[in-house]
Image (tube, rainbow, N blue to C red; front, top):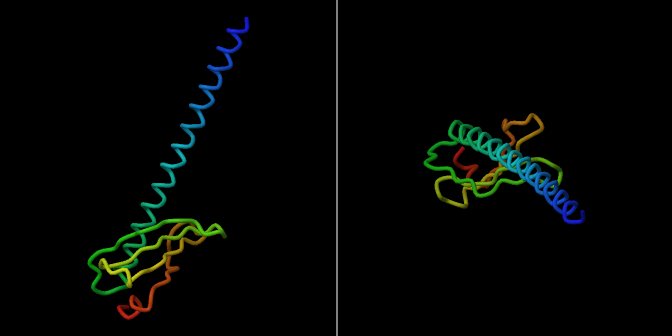
Length: 107
């Protein structure tokens, strides 16, 4: 009787663990799609507003302590031309863009 109870509890724990693992993976996939979409929007914004852009490198995506997602990166393989793009509460990047002084000269 004791072995059956241990077996049943083990099976239930495996099923619950599998369920939570699948939910975690779905959430990660959803986050990855979000960041890829925002990177594409930021790239489009940069190409439209800044002259002589050859490459864009994203080095970090994070969420600020206030809950605002942000992308950090630089252009033309020059880390002095860095930027931070904030994704506001409209769920997509619009135009909240902070840039270095060097990058400001290119605009």
